[in-house]
Structure formats: C-alpha cells, structure tokens
Length: 263
Length: 263
Image (cartoon, rainbow over all chains, first blue to last red; front, side, top):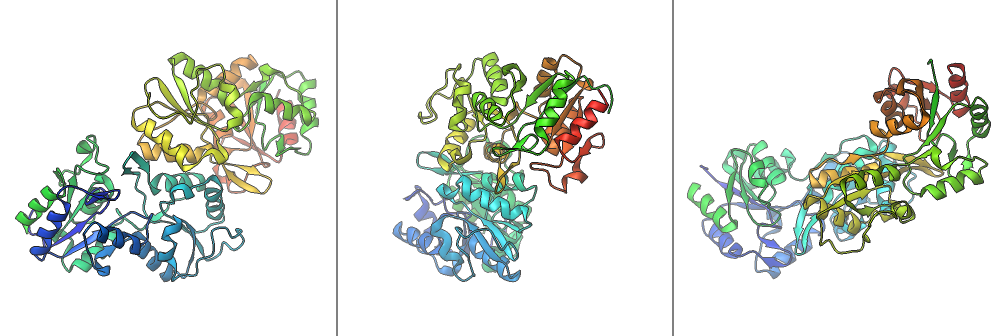
C-alpha cells in the first residue's frame, strides 16, 4: 500500500457490532482524525435511516458530519430522481424517512399502477414476508425496474450470522428472470461518489471493510485499494477469497496502522 | 411425436387451477383411461400432502390410485433415508404429514445439532418468514446438506402469479454460497422414477405440463417427449423459450388428442 490520501470506512463489523464499539475503534479513528486524512463512512446497512446511524455512532462516542456518511438510500434517491420514477419500497420501515423527498406510495397500496414505479429492495428484515415479496414479484413481472440498495449475503448479529438484503434480491431476480441494479457496494459508482467526496483519485483511496466481496473486492474492482479486517462477518474461509491485491489485518486498529504508514 | 406408451401429467395448471377443473380436463383424462395408456400424475406442488391432493382431485371427479401420484416429498424421503439424514423442514405445515415416517425435529427447535441434519425446502408460502429462512441459512453455513423439493419460479393462483419454492431456494443458495440438490422436476431422477412406474422407456413417455422449464425442458433433457399447454402459468413469452423438440398445444384436451394419435 502506498500514496493514501483518503479513507473509506465500513461501519457495522468494522467499528462496531450491535451497539458495542469494537476494541480499538475509537482510538483508531482519533489517530486518523489527527492526521487530517479525509474520511467517508460507507455503509451498505439499510435497516436504519441516516439520522439513526449518526445518533448510534454519537452514542458510542463517534461523531461524524452529515457529509461524511454515504448510504445506499441516498444513492437510490438520486437514481430514482434522475429517471422520474417513484419507488415501490420493500425496505425496513425505519428506513422510509430517507425516501421522504420522493413520492412514495405506501407498500400496502394495491398493485394497480406499475408504470413509472420501480421496485426498491433493502434489508427489510422481518418485513420480508411472503406477501410483500409476492407484491414486488408481480410488479417485476409487469416490467417495473428493479433497484437493490445492496446485495450483501449476510451480516453478523450478536447471536450469529443473519440474512442481509442480497438473498431476497436474488430470490426476486430468480422469480422474475431479471437482474437488479445494485446501488450500494460493490457498485463502482457508489465507491466513486465517496472518492469524489474525499477529494482524491480512486487509486489514492483505501476501503476498510469486513465483507471480502462487497467491501474489498468491490473497492479494488473500482480502482481503489482495499483492506479486509478479521472482525464482524469475517470468516476464516474469506482469507482464500481475498483479492490478491487486498490486505488482510486483524482489526480497525491494525488497518489504521497500515494506512498511516502509507499516507 | 411417435411411439407413446406412457403419459406423465402435471396437475396444477394442466388439469385444474385453484379448485376448478380446466375445461375439457375430465373428458381428456377419460379418453386416456379408455385407451388404457399408463399414466402417472407428476406434481411439483409442495403445499399439500398426498392425501389432500388426492382428496382434491376426487372432489373434482378425478380418481387416481396412490401408486399413480409422484411427489417431491416422496422422493425427498427416499433421499434422506438413503443418507440417514433427518430433515430440518422449511415447508408448508400441511406437508409435514408426508415426512412423518422420518425422525423430523420441529422447525422451532433451536439450531444445536447440525450434524446429520439436512435443510429441506418446499413451497412454505406464508411460512417463508425472515426468521425461518434465517434458521435454515445458519444450518447451511454450518455445512448441512441442502435439499430442495422443487425450484419452480412461480405458479398461477386465481388472482395472479405467485412465488413458488424456487426463489426461496435461490435466496438460501445465494446466502450460503451453496447449491441445492433438487428432487422434483426438472431433476432427471424424478422423471425416471415416474417412467419406471409407467413400465416403458423414457423415449416412449411424454410429459404434459404448463411449466416450459421444469415440465417440458426437464422431461426432454431426461430423454422423454414433452408437451406444453397454454393454460395455468403459461405466458406468451414461453413460446420462444420452448425446447425445439417440445410440442405446444392449447390445453389438456389438445394434448391428449396429440398423444392418442401417436400412441
């Protein structure tokens, strides 16, 4: 690693798990701030709105500016706005506020006006009922565009691994015979928007994450550098799946050590 | 088509939709019985047990022997028995009775003994909750074998198309990074078991179905002949997807005309 001028940090599994900061996370971030390296927090989590993510970080003693947080919901609003589409939302109810700017019909509304309606899927959690999935499926079969906030396979909860949005996106893709447009990681456009905010070139930015595919593989494919931490959803099998240009470290503290040495 | 000595008939979408016989179904079946052509009823439906399928057919005036009905649940019991595996069932509650012969722990049981436990997925309908899917996912991540009763994309209900087991199998495959073993159509072994019951060679058997992939494509790939009917889940787009050796007819009546002319 060399020539680092900006840092992208994943949140869940890198800085914290559940409501608990990971050991060394606060100190690592403080060292990054001291060196005045630009940082953007880049999450694929779609269970909570921006407001709640920032409040949660603040409660753990981490403060970040509104312009430092990159979420798939924000990217989706841009995507929908450019195409003048209104969303049929299959997302966690808490996330709805991040779509408030758009004309967003209620998910309970009968499927009667598929025109100009895009199916938008995030990590709906318990909201992934058969009925809700079937409603989205029928819209896809009528030709509605399909936007996935993310396609992560799973994330780590306190009691074990849990299904993320990806499997449900895959289910609807299989059912409808279609492919979703993914706006979150590993979409290159998502990384590039964050790098633009850093004010450097992609090759000068490094992404730190616990997802060997969406975080590290995606960043490297988008022309960034990548570091995989062994916390969060990391599993030992991921070592064999790490991109040959990816760097493997124990945790966020070790990642920041490597970054500061290369900045 | 030529040299037909046995017939495989799909049920839902071919003979009936919901609780209603399709026009001409009863007469078509009567003509087949008159000619004494061996017939097997081959369904991928996994929402109802054998008993209920037969009772439903009987209520519509169609009677078939217990040895004339081939279901994925029966094939799954054979598969599990041969491997001395007990099933973790993610299926419709009504179907549980078809697994009664096996030691079948309750789905609510905590995930504590993954060894010798296979994840078995059918069309669970409303039973496909986030929690139930997550429980199956965690077993797969611990290495449990993965058996799919079927992998159909959707079926036709009275009010429209609805998600079948396939999308949920695809979801768990994506989440777990694994591939399910499918026992129902289009698995060649499923067709071959039915053909053995007919007492003829695969090339002398014809499958009649409304699913261009699982019924017709699967049968032809297994060495049988195949007829697609334009009832049930059939959509006009399916014409372009029909195998070049497949025959397209309007409905079951027209299918039986073609079969009797080639028998």
